Picture: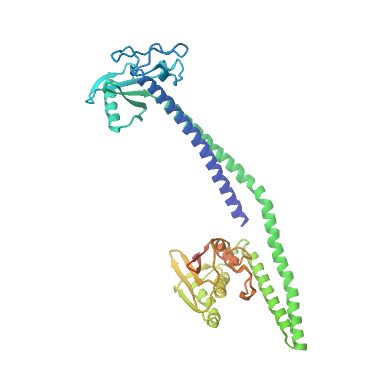
Length: 430
């Protein structure tokens, strides 16, 4: 159990660290990419506002360029733009010399009227025209085509101008940063995980020691309690012989019997939670074991007017501890008998599914179970009867024992409550 706890603790730490590192790398790269796109879009917007070119007098140290109100003016400024439109841009004076861009202008009939590739050497007029038509089909104002960011701008004269900006170097830098940050995060994950796995033993040791002490105390205390219980029960017999039976001796014997049963269950549970003894595993008939273990409960069912039905698949064999499986079937059947109302039906089934056996026990429950009850039914001393009525004879240990047995056989156990029916489902590898 401690080994499993260490593995789960390590896995939880590694998953948590992975999620944190993945989030950090993702945020950094998303911000980096967003910054590239935002800067590129600002440059494209500025170029579009200047008739598809950077104004020759562009210099952030000097006054903004002058713009004409004449729509026929081709000196560089767009006639419908105002100087204040440019105040929102804050570029380095080197931006015009670093930017590589080209424009393609379409007339009202969407025929190419002008292509300007003078600011880029890697793109021919034919390539520019082909890319522009492809962008028109996308029907979007902004976007990315290969290594070019583009903006579609409609002029007041009805023409449409598409400006492309080369962002290849920026994307290359982004990809380099993405790879470096991802590899660094992965290396940090691996190194940290190795260190944690090595040191996890020291972290788990106090828990392991406490758990071992608890199991040893339960086992030792159980054996120590058995002797006085036996003596008390023997003295009760002596009193009955000398003075006859009475309600007091009956109560003494009943309570010592309950305490003996509880002690035996605790000791058994402590043993089951230790490393399973595989030497005790043998090949046996699971079908016969279930039938033989459940058969004695037919008398109890008859006394409570309960219809006990079984559907057990024949000729199913299993490799495991036959005594533990007998205990498992007795526990879940006894639990169903205790908490099923009279004149109801209890159903026990076992079917072979692949290389596993699926066992289920269903019964109408006298208690109305909540989701919280279902999540705790396998906890020690947990009882759905909050009054802890002793008439049922339970201690809240039975299903804990069942879970320990299933776990020792590398199986799975679960519980569900639907339409007032409580069902225990068990899967055991064969």
